[in-house]
Structures are given as C-alpha cells and as structure tokens.
Image (cartoon, rainbow, N blue to C red; front, top):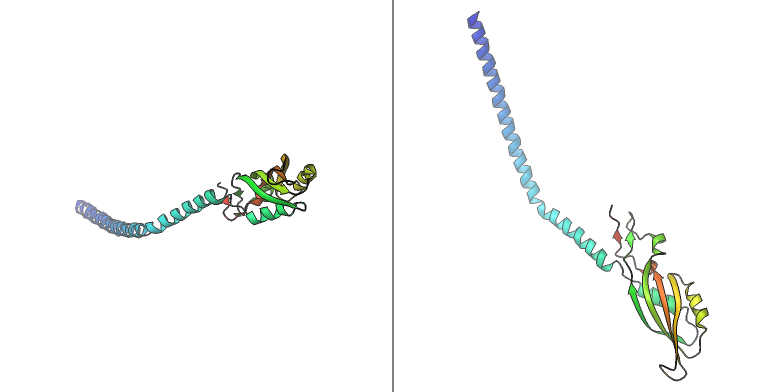
Length: 186
C-alpha cells in the first residue's frame, strides 16, 4: 500500500509539473502576442498624433476665425436703409465674442440674436439735413441690429452744404458668417 501511495504521489507531481509547463508555454505565447500588438499600436502613433494635431488646429481656427463676418450682407443692410442723397462713408466697428455652436455644430440662433456681434460707429454723409431720430429708429428694425443711437451731426465738415452724421450701432451675432463656429465642449 505504501508503494501505491508513493506511485500515486509521483503521478500527481508529474501531472502538476506538466500542467505548469503547459501554462508557462501559453503565457509565453500570449506575452509574445501582446508585444506584437504593442508594436502595431506604436506604429499607429503617427495617426494618433495627426488626429490630435487636426483637432488642435480646428480649435485654433474656430478661436481665430469664429468672429468671421459677412461684410457684404452687413453693408447691404445698412445701405438699404439710407435715405436719398446719403452715403455710408466710414465705420469703426469692433467684433464681439465668437459665437459658440450647439451639438450639431451650428450657431445657436436664439443666442446669436441677443449676443453682441459688432459694435461701433457709422459715419454718414448727406447733401440734405436728415431727421436723424427717424433714421435711427428705422435702423433698429434692420435684421441683425440690436441697438442704434444718434451720436453727432456736423454741418459743412466735408464740403459746404453737406452734413456728416455719426450713428452708434450694435449688431447681434447673426452678422457672423458661422463658417468657423466652435462646438460647445461638454
């Protein structure tokens, strides 16, 4: 019976050794496969870096060009309100903050109609005296204008019989082109 017990112990030890040897071989094979995958991932680091650079450049472009204006549309809106014999001869306008986009990448229209886009002064030249109050009230009804107020009137500054008017004006953010709107970060 003692010999049988010793023989059984030897068989069990040999089986354990065989199982251990097989496990070590599988572990070595999986470690080799892991090393191959790490090498493949490292080979794709250029792609990851390029995607990160693209995202950084897109954000930079949105920051730099978010307040891109539709100048032609703005000037057409103003020129369309000018009385006869009146010209827009100058302006000093400062852009406001760039609009943020919603999840769809487009500017939030409701917010754009209440946020400041451009603010500054328009200079008008006219051969006739204008009712500046009535003109300013008509400007307030122009699409994209938040506020408009008379600033000053000068007679004969550019030529005898000519009038120069300055009008303070604020446009909403609908004057922006929206081409480079920055998406809202969550």
